[in-house]
Amino acid sequence: MLKLRLLNAVAPVYFFTATAVTFIFHFCFFIPTIFPKPDTSLRGSTTLHTAVFLFFMFNALGNYVMTIRYPAESANQTAVPVCWPNCSDKVDAHYLLNGRHFCKLCKKVILKRDHHCFFTGNCIGNKNMRYFIMFCIYTSCTCLYSLVLGVAFLTVEYSISFENPLTFLTLLPLSTGYFFMGTVSGLQLFLVLMLYVWLGIGLVCAGFCCQQVLLVARGQTWCQLQRGELQDSRSPWQSNLKDVFGTRWILGLIVPVQTVETCSEDADAHKQD
Image (cartoon, rainbow, N blue to C red; front, top):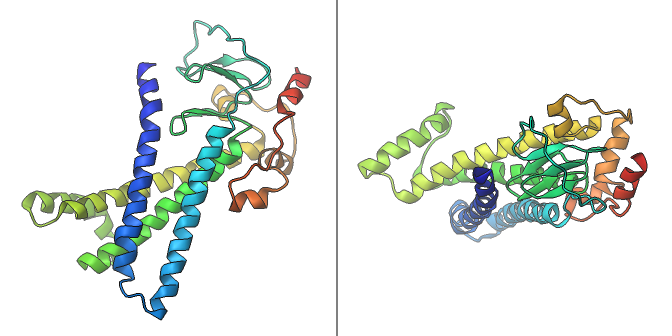
């Protein structure tokens, strides 16, 4: 449990550090190098790339904040359940009623708990699932977009050709070797390392997004999937997606705003009890 609590504190710091590094690389290195002259032909491209990057970054950070701002805790249930002796889950105590779980890290009863997200430091449930999915989408877009700009920067600044597919695979070990030989600067090595970080985070977030959308469409949570529990309700996937994304889901794709009414969710859950 101590390791999990440490991870719960370190993961947000890692996220904000990676975000700050990405922001600095984009505006201090990528844009000035790829578009060096502010003439008319390049001014439009510079503005477009900057606008796309800021749009991705704004939505990623905005949905990150919304995920934390709207916690998934059940407002009508504060009793702490006693974990049964054979519980193997180090975070989730045990199943209560209608998808309510007690998270040992949050120390709260979570309504329709899906999982505990260490990068946000809280649990993901029906109240913040939409923001978490959008956070994964835009974080993936930001990282993959930064990866493309980083490759373009290396091509322009250091004349590295990526025509051979093996170039990217061997880039990190070769750069590390050249760094210790004194032929590669620390900035170039750090940028190469960030390329792999962006690729890894982008693919992981994209995988998380696909998984969560599939579970939402099935009306199921990750907790239920792990326990082998099937969802009793046979609601159509359109209704399940609407419950999470709301009727104004198009607006939610563009701006990180609340699109689902949350005031009656706990009451509906109690009616099912």
